[in-house]
Length: 314
Ligand code: TXA
Ligand code: MG
Image (cartoon, rainbow, N blue to C red; front, side):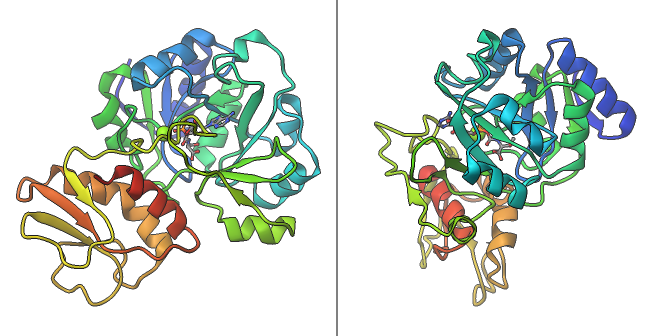
């Protein structure tokens, strides 16, 4: 079995059975599509790495459907519990000390003594986890080094028949991956900017949230290598005057002639939701050899956008 299936109740049940049988199911979350397997099935988890072509040292996020179950897998301190209450289900992922020593989880945790957990805000994702009856390990459902998929079609383009089932729940609302917050230290550290902003976290915690230094040689978050997102075309950012051979992706007002605009009204959330789809389209467009993007304000979810496009640019 493979291909795209409408995410109705029947197919979600089948998806749960596929996961239990050791298969891979791609499914929608509010951020991007995930490529899911049973966290306790190391063969299935290994096939995630294989299908993605992802380096094996890169740990995966364990997705749960019941926020209160966080403590079953991770040593959740009061900060984690407070933030989970406030933002879950939602685009926020915690890195915490691992409590479940079950060796089957080693691959999901990439051998680390930490575990990475989130409760996604999407009815299909939650129903699939419930149908499977186990947490679901899921990286973004794309080949390693390419753009995260925000539609079922994009998953199929990237992974094709190597996935047993792709559940189609329409386009993802948030459009960039979840925020990853490291709570294994006394000071909270933002490992990846995402759907929940640093400002929101600082306000909730009433303390500063630090940003990992982003050194690509010694990444705190192993997946945060500088070249994580890479279109095949040469891609410039912070561009105000595109060259003739560059497909220009604008942002905000005053770009009436631009072939693409992430948000003509300058709305960063809208831009985030469009980002990967537009980059994918621009990369495929046969009329331009290169691509370029307008400056994006570095505030709110703009931080996540700039993080992604900086990694993608060259
Ligand atoms: O929005 C999302 O988070 C999506 C959806 C499917 O939930 N998932 C996602 O997973 O983006 P992935 O694997 O593509 O990105 C997770 C990132 C990777 O860069 C990984 O290195 C980092 O999280 N990560 C996972 N566990 C970690 C850990 N224990 N310590 C440090 N970094 C970790
Ligand atoms: Mg990814």
